[in-house]
Length: 116
Picture 1: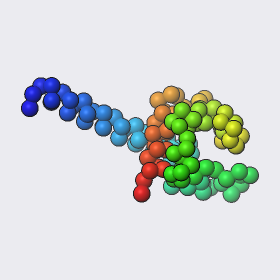
Picture 2: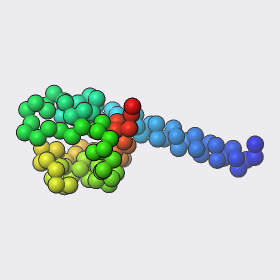
Picture 3: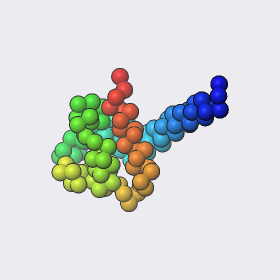
Picture 4: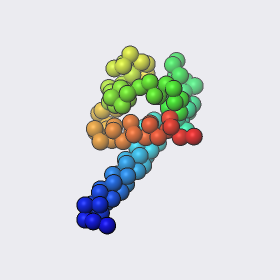
């Protein structure tokens, strides 16, 4: 194996490890900030859901989630539901989460909606 090939393999492995780490961080953040409304499985049936006038979004609904761009997901997490003309009951989290954490959550939402 040439140095160039080895460098490529190492770079790809590093990227995969970084993606896995981001998903894990996203999962931890999801458990801390999102499960109360969206549920631990992401199905929209969190402990607070029964008390809300608008049912929280199911993050395991592939059709709905694939209709949203990463930018929209980032914006709704950062700025709240009203930022994308959705429920005002979805709070803005930019005061609690930084850009890296919000991106990790977006990545985890993609994992949730695509798992079988």
